[in-house]
Length: 163
Image 1 (cartoon, one colour):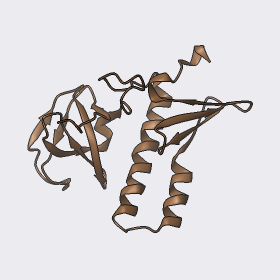
Image 2 (image 1 turned 135 degrees about the vertical axis):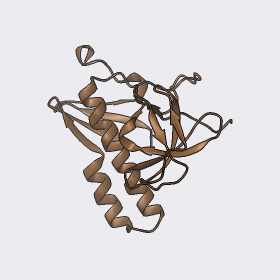
Image 3 (image 1 turned 180 degrees about the horizontal axis):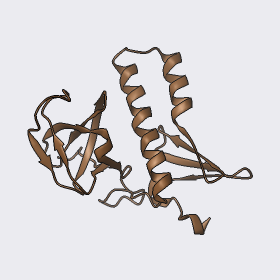
């Protein structure tokens, strides 16, 4: 599938997947750990995913880790985020939450003012005396350390000791 781009990876322990967004539905498949998937939407605590072969299913959002958009150098692989695990978890939660807000807006469940406020609340993460802003429109992270601003594609975010 030419338009399939992995955005997440199934956590190491794997994940049961359902064919519907019903959390009570029986699993119709089990996804292997480390499988790359593309997130297509959210409903409640479930994430709609698509595998590279086109299969679409629903998994618990907490069973996925964000790997980001394709690498900025045009390579075939995803742009892996090189962050300490605590910051990666915070940014993943913020991205999932922001995407859920966008989905609610697209389904006309919230208005544009509410969407703007939710994104303001969800796209800013404080960690290790730095502010990280998720810039959804430009697919980048912006870091502010109190003195300077730096923007990174997910594959370019420096390790903490390289700043």
